[in-house]
Structures are given as structure tokens and as C-alpha cells.
Image 1: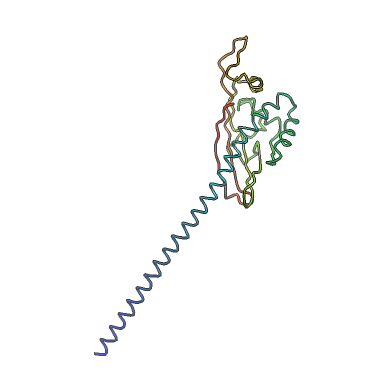
Image 2: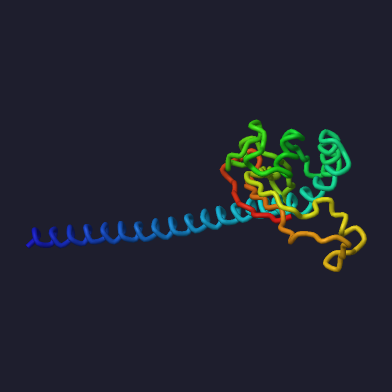
Length: 208
């Protein structure tokens, strides 16, 4: 009789241990799910921040810097243009490639670029433009931008038609051919300084 009682106690002990293990497994699973969710949320937030930096850099290049350079190249030497750009865009610590290479990329078809002008799709390899964008917290972002393809158009790059407010109402005494714009493909990469794992790449097709 005592033997059966001991056997029953052993079964109860094993059952208790099994329930404990199952409970621990459930707790560990819940902890893992919560930790993984937190990590994914943090990664998504960091990616969103660096993506915004890349987008901001791209907008700055195509909306401000490229029209600025187009206008400057009409009036100044290449070296003066670069110096003026660095001064006027000092707020983002602007750095550029060589003046001749940048001018060639803006005014010549890709096939006519000098061999020294880099056309690889990696914007961080010999970029045309490098800038620093400050973050609201933590370390700032570095944005690299590069023109990787140019199709020359016949549009007015000087902007003179817009200076007097002519715009679409502009009339000329001479017959002009149907305009088609300069087309640029740019590769842009934004990344967190001191942590290059946090990065985002975008491609931009810009018509001027």
C-alpha cells in the first residue's frame, strides 16, 4: 500500500514540474514577443528618421542647389561657383566634387563626361555633393548625392525667362523648337553619423 502512495506522490511531482516548465515557456515566449516588438518599433523609427534625411537632402539638391548652380555657371568661373556654393550653403556644411566634373555632369550627356567623373550607382563612392543635416536629437545625418546619368535638353538653363515673370506667357519674336528638359538621374544616400548601419538609399529622376 505504501508503494502505491509513493508512486502517486511521484506522479504529482512530475506533473507539478511539467506545469512549471510550461508556465516558464509561456512567460519566455511573451517576453520574446514583447522584446522583438520593441526592437522592430525602434528599427522602424530609426529607418524613418534616416529616410526623412535622405528625402530632405534630395529635395535640397534638386529644388535649391541645382538651380543655384545652373544660374551661377552662367556668370562665374567653375572654381568661383564652388566657392560661392560652399559659402551660401554653409548651413549644411556643403562639400562638392571638382568644379569641372560637376559642370560636365550638369551640361553634358553621360557619354561625354570626363573619365575622372564617377558614374557608379553608389552615391557614397566619390559623391558629387555631401552635406550634413542636423537631427532634433542624437547625432546628425550625412547625405551623399551623385548625378549618375544626364540627358541634355534644350530648355533654358539660365532662368532668364522667369526673371521678369514671363513664365508660360513668354513670347519670342523668333520661332523656337519644342522644348524638352534636361533629365538627371540622381542617387542619394542618407546615413547616421558614427553609425553607418542606419542608412537609406533613394533614386531621383529630375527634369530641369
